[in-house]
Length: 133
Image (cartoon, rainbow, N blue to C red; front, side):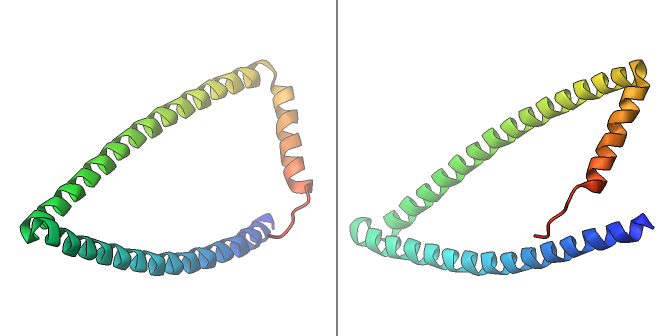
């Protein structure tokens, strides 16, 4: 009896979230297309301007060197961010393991207190008021 009610409540939220995500994805795709167009036109304008100064081969080499430099900087940033994320995930895992160990100790030492806490959590989730988005 509780399962159909929960699935109905979750289903409405999921449908709205999926619709919002699709809509946002379409607008992001349109914006990305125009940003790429602007980037291509800016590189073309820069190449034409640099060709007047360094010649066509020099302009192409200069733009290629700039692109390689930007790619290397992006890869270095990615490596640094991945290392930070890995460190944070390890810290979260260690914190969860220590909390689980403390919880197991509490369950073993005081099972009635644990049952009371669980009943209070379930009651607060069932009785609390919910507002629509």
